[in-house]
Length: 142
Image (cartoon, rainbow, N blue to C red; front, top):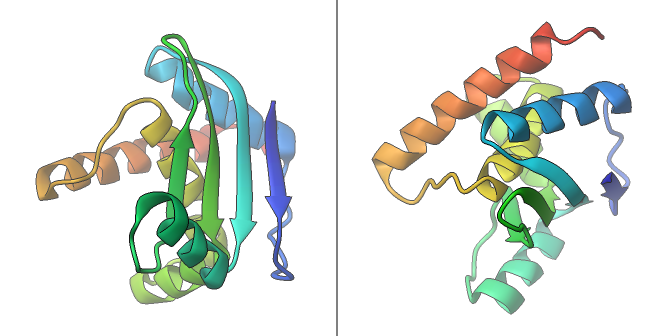
C-alpha cells in the first residue's frame, strides 16, 4: 500500500492517486522489485531537520529522507519529504512545485531500490534515472 500523509497546511496539487500508484509500481518493477508498504510523510523544514538530527545525526535541512524497510524482492519504507524545500528547489531550478514534488517522490523510490547518490557520478546517474521515471509518468494516461 502506498500512503501519503500531509502534515503541513501546504496545498498539494490535484493528483490521480491510481496513476501515481501505477507509476511508482512501474518504476520499482523496472528495478526488479514489487512494492510493499510505502508511506510518504509530507512535512515542513523544521520536521525534516528534527528527523535528520534524531535519526541521522545531521544538522541540516534536506528535501527527502528515506527509511528503507525493503526485503530482497519488495520495496517498503517511510519517505519524509519537506514541502518547504521542494518549493524552494522548484523555484531554484525553474520547475513547478508539482514537477519537483514528483521528482522527489520518485527519488525516494529509487533509494528504496538501492540507487545511490553519494558521489557526483552517482548523483548524475540518479538524476538520469529520475528523468526516465518522470518521462514514464508523463506517458501514463491521466
